[in-house]
Image (tube, rainbow, N blue to C red; front, top):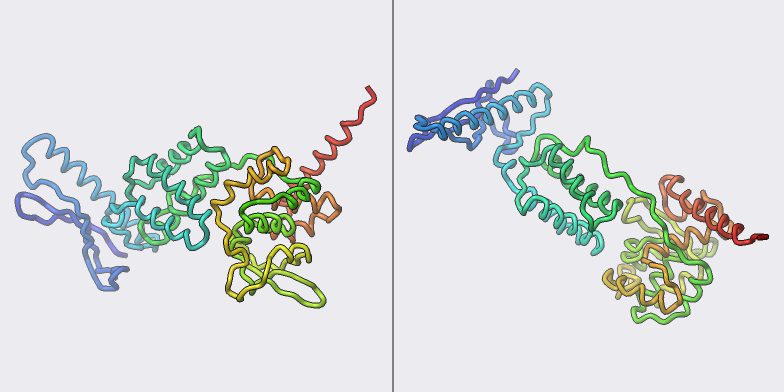
Length: 365
């Protein structure tokens, strides 16, 4: 069994350095070389001359002992990963910011969501957060901060906190921290929300209404006819559009959100919205940009629709219209690419509520 000792080494100018001593020597997981030492970068005074320096020595030795005990437990558990003190003193904020920048490769909307989380985390920490600061208590407090923020809905707070937890887990996987402090922290429970969708008549009126952003117009209507999310519509390329005599037109693609491989049949009318075919690697909706979605309310208002309609409402429209027109819920679930039938059942509940509203309109008194 490897033993870990807290040692002292005299330095110049009356300082003493604290380090860990391993016996027998261990293989350093970063250099793969044999070593007996881990420098903690902790220093005490050789001859403390006042109460402040004596208290400093006391607290620093306690910290060094904590590191020693942690290393000993890691060896006993067989989970030694050598998360150095140097790593724990690095900035988690910088780490999270780099992770956020990497989301640009996915989509602009994904990046913007992650960037919002980063800004809230930056504000919560006052612009400074080290890996050493990541504790279960810290995670709980950030969770409360998001929930109590008057600018965020509960569901947005839930989404942001889950992304924060992904960032913390990434730090653990990259050996920046020795344990995952957010592992047992429960996510924020989602609140059931009103899912806006268009009636068939509203959708038909919208299709006749001009819109300055033509690619967004076609993409939105295509979503209403296929149930595809914005992220999947935006990345759609011509090689994913296929045709056969038996099946007609269909799409073979991988969902960006769930990573599930899908084969989705599409109608001739949906295919007609795609425009002139391009090269295999070319995007179908070349001029589609996420910022354009901010102008959707103007388009829907011109079509006589007063409710708030987002791009995701077109996916809801596809689901509710399919169920309204008689498609069974299992088939709708498969068309939407849901992994769980319960996710699709919310649409059946919406239809039941609409039926109840309809029959209550007829009264004898």
